[in-house]
Amino acid sequence: MDFDLNGADAKHSYKLLAGLVVPRPIAWVTTLNEDGVINAAPFSFFNVMGTRPPIVAFAPGDRSPGIPKDTAKNIRTSGEFVINLVDEETAEAMNITSAEIAAGESEITLAGLHTESSRSIAPPRISEAPVAIECREWSTLEVGRNRIVIGLVQCLHVKDGILDPETLLVRPEAYAPVGRMEVPSGYCRTRDRFDMPRP
Ligand SMILES: Cc1cc2nc3c(=O)[nH]c(=O)nc-3n(C[C@H](O)[C@H](O)[C@H](O)COP(=O)(O)O)c2cc1C
Image (cartoon, rainbow, N blue to C red; front, side, top):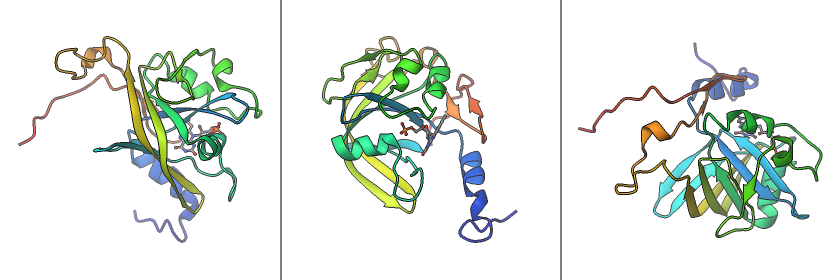
């Protein structure tokens, strides 16, 4: 099957691309609004984009043309955000924070989560998350109704036990991230792993 995503099949673009380009990691982004209210929301159009310098990117689509989601709006104002990562234990809470709630209310309270101060930026990280990546906005690209937020990593927080303290390699048995799978609500666990040394 072939699809013309700029023409006749444009209306299927999300269903096809988001359903097929899987599994995707989930950026669970915390920001502060101008009144200091903590905003949390998940974004699976996300990945690490490089390490020298360390950069990440995620893509909050506009709600309607020119009207950004709260996360994008807060980053445009403050230039700071935390990408918390999602594991099996936090998956349900992550899903709760994707609800649209009134500006001024916090998804953190709604999901029964806790936060802790970040080391380098004002938005806090989610205490329950296994990994938190403190970022400053490098740039935000606008492509139609997509925004691609590029973050320069300032500080990486990893829960004790996930890394081998000697090698700094991940201990697979101690880290169970979930991935975004089929549209509309599929996820995967990542415990069935295999090793394939590079040639
Ligand atoms: C697992 C998951 C992944 C999501 N990924 C994205 C995404 O990549 N881009 C996007 O615009 N919305 C995504 N959403 C929807 C947003 O989380 C949702 O619109 C949220 O209300 C935005 O919150 P905000 O207005 O506080 O920024 C995703 C939702 C879930 C549950």
